[in-house]
Length: 549
Image (cartoon, rainbow, N blue to C red; front, side, top):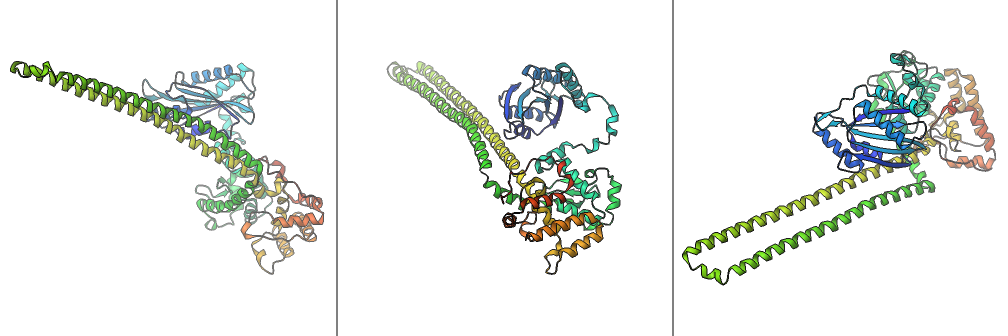
């Protein structure tokens, strides 16, 4: 039983996050109370407007209830009532949603922090400890299990836990969602490169081979930038190493020659752009991915159709109301004109000839004119009121259109990110995913060196040079074994500048298919693949089968 919460003033982001149908299998809006609007965007807009009347910057509080097993609606409402009581949010405007994500049932609740009676934000001090106590009480009441960190209250001792520093933060989780590379996977790869390198330069080269760039941090001495443009502290990515150990080992690198964080981001994003373009081209040929995208577009069109119908109904109703009001004005004017015509003939004309009665007739006509002006003013007020009401209704629907348009863009970006990540991983970590292009990727790294483009470059000389520098005879022997196999199979070691981060071309895989030695090459390259491949827990790559011999 995990309960977490956050104060925020970014209600637009929160509305899109709660209604994202790509990340969630089902979304059920259970309750919107305390607001005039009945939809999520409108309710959050009202909460934001209340916050604007105070000095508070974060006007809503969003809680997340994640039980280890599905709960009934009564149990969820009991949990919400307990959280409101502990946080002092009882009676506030709130939104309750139920999500199912990857088969996991959970609940989102959003409260307004603004006390309308006093127009002040409710102070939420120590909210994490209060939510922790709520989780413990609800787990005991419902018979649920608690994570190890919630079972016992360790107090200040939890800050001295060495494993606490290695746990991923919310920012790291967001980075993992964006890049597709988890914190554990990234830490395992960088740790392996650290342990297998005996010099600063070899460690830097190993990082580049893994898809990371060593840069100069603003507040830290060394940071690494990945292909997603995310920056990570180098000391936090190495298990068992401290900052002073990192500085001692990398003291041979001149900090002035390292790129800054901003420049490192630009360089890595430029490299990632080529990978993304290739991944998008491959994604266009994926019929399954195209079917999923068409299904999402159809669902978005169906969702927008309901708003279109509401817009048509509103327009027809507005036109009918304008016609009814105009007909009422015309009827009043016709009755007034008829009365004036009746007064302008007969006795009225005779009475005007009498001096005494002429003043009375004029006084009566002045009163009639004043009454007519008051009626016209009243009609103008009715017409202005109707126009304002029609404008407010149109603005409300337009607001829902804008919110739906933002949600559609978010869902399409989320779907593209989910679909493109396997292709990115197949290119970035091709030798770990299992596609036949990636099987040769590690062999390409054996000959990957800036000097290999020279005409007199010799692979054996390069291996001997590396052996003298690193003195890793066992690793060099494995490299030589793979190199001998590649030469025997007629596979050339190339480095195409246009596809620097891609595996060998497909025709080289055809060479393996023609020689009929695919299984042998598979077994050979498996020996030199990094030992940390089983540690990775990222999303699987695209399903690509080996060509039949």
